[in-house]
Amino acid sequence: MACSSASDGSPEDSGGSGGGVSSSSGGPQTTSTGEGSGVSSSTSGASSTTATSGSGGGASSSSSSSSSASGAGGAGGSGSTAEASSGSGGSPDTGFQPCPATGACKILPLGDSITFGLGFDGGYRVELFHLATQDGHEVTFTGTQQANGPAMVDGKPFPRNHEGISGETIQQIANRIPTPGLRDMPHIVLLHAGTNDMYREPNGADTRLGALIDELIAEAPDALIVVSNIIPFPMGAGAVNTYNAKIPALVEARASKGAHVLFVDQFKDFPTSELGDGVHPNKAGYARMAGRWYDAISDYLR
Image 1 (cartoon, rainbow, N blue to C red):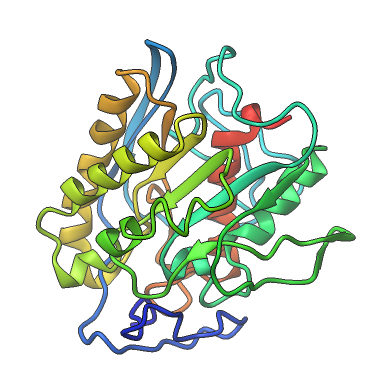
Image 2: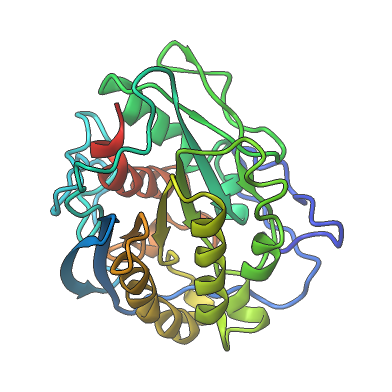
């Protein structure tokens, strides 16, 4: 499927607005339509805050609902095309502020082709930039991969950078940390990883994700690391359910030790109708993802 990549790790698709699917690794990719739990954690120093919400399946819902947080992650701005987030964000510790007092807060979108934006040029980054700027926040995106997305959003130049590579597994993403992924040190990291592992080698994916989170914490100790479960991948529902169920505890364990890490539930209530090709979101699906990322980070933005 389109999350596969060439042997050199470069994106096989331009990530344009078309929903084309390319493959070189063989085999389908996996997502789930089952239940995902919602636990969000954040810490500063030794303190930690954990919020939980009930599990949810892939019930269909309108993509035109406004974005809002059911935790204390901050209400999304008006006009969001993403659905209300449940289990995202969490009450931020006011003693921790990753973004600078002046200048843009640097956000690193980290992952595979879903982060790249296959199926809709710029992916979730387009709506995320819109939500942040309409609320008066100054943000930019960092990353070393093929720049994509529109030239302008809301009359402002759109930062087209990211670190999303089509076909990459968790371990391949980890191999790019700290170099080149953290070359321009971010203030916030948005991590969505594991879809490619689901059909290549789902066993141990949670362990590999934990190691990647640890690497990010060690290499970017002053950044906010925002970790999500993966969106539905109907061809591998069972593997995704197993994997997603383990992620909140991975995040909570590290938050309880003082790491600046949050969990975001990108799976809950994500309808398969918003998967353009069965793997990658369409425009509405990416907007939904953006709303949930924004709910999690908005209170940390200046």
